[in-house]
Image 1 (cartoon, rainbow, N blue to C red):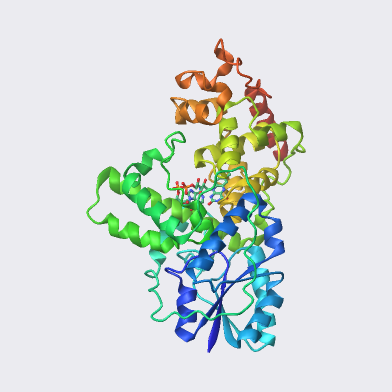
Image 2 (cartoon, rainbow, N blue to C red):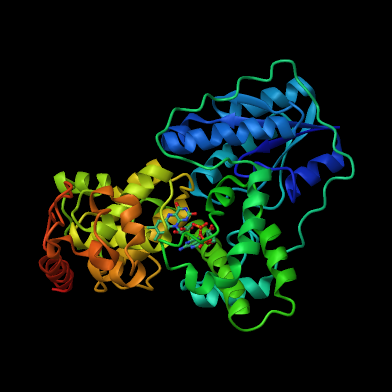
Length: 453
Ligand code: FAD
């Protein structure tokens, strides 16, 4: 019998459990549905990435990929009827919108006598599965990551023994890619594998220390591929396991550190699965009484990278230029918005999601909540990043700042972090600081105190 594979965040053919399950049953009609509710929230950078990924996926399916626009709960039963398919196969979707949508689609297919089959998910361990001894979720990362490792994951799925695409006459147009300023990478299965192997060969060995130096730019940049599912994380975990054999010392440390970062992605998806309200609201109500300011001119200066704090501005400009920002600087710019500008984290999270090509509701919104002190609680609210010290520590030679802030490119070495101390600091139009960090830090702590009264 014919089967439908409904692609969502799994835009590849290799190590694809749902595709393998569909192909084992019969010929497969590959489908992608452009869902307005998701597209409206995506921003141009991610729409452009999606258009690119779908173009490659249509090629990879020998031109069989069907693209439709509208409500999946209407489109999938209609396609199933058109090709006489008995089942729609998917990778399970753990995020709040996707779960609600899939419930509706399952119901509509049920009514039409078509099965809805979930096999695997975009995670090594499907969110919700890792539990403690009492069957509850882990609230803190480290015990989660240990249990996640113990839980283990299956080996990558074999390619289907036979894979025959089924075809319809009206394929539907691929979405047009909006023109974007940001220089974004190619999003395809081939480019994901190429990037992954280049990282393993060139930069994995020094990852443990190199990952914190934004100017070196040696992190894997796999986030965009994990976002769109052009690679499955367990393909990566299996390769790490192979490369762990015989490794010792710093090289082993680096490999384990990389695996831990993949575990953070799984952790945040798990947190969001258990607490679907935490996509746009505080996970905990510990800071429910905290007073925030409405976003105003200073918020716009932050968005545009004109705060007068070089490391913050470099990060915000990298975001606009590449649709990506280094993790260290994501933490710093988020801290600056919440604790120096006193703006509630969802405003910043929204801006990030509008511009990140790897924009992911779990990693982004929980990354923000971690910084804002409303989330999984490793960084309490009273810990405030100092934007100058962060620059001096993680960009000691000033390379990162000079790369992204041309008005400071004339300043040598680490002096870029304090243009107010350099005679020629403002000669090329760099803006003055919009606030006094010491004062705003004190203000943030006062506001925190006030919640306790
Ligand atoms: P690498 O250092 O090479 O890490 C490898 C992989 O591990 C990443 O691709 C990612 O999948 C995972 N990872 C690493 N760090 C984290 C982390 N802190 N949380 C979750 N997963 C992690 N990541 C996203 O994928 N999408 C987002 O929208 C996103 N928004 C963020 C917002 C804030 C405020 C913060 C502090 C972090 C955010 N992150 C997000 C996490 C992290 O910054 C990025 O995953 C990382 O910078 C991606 O670059 P990379 O692939 O080169 O990372």
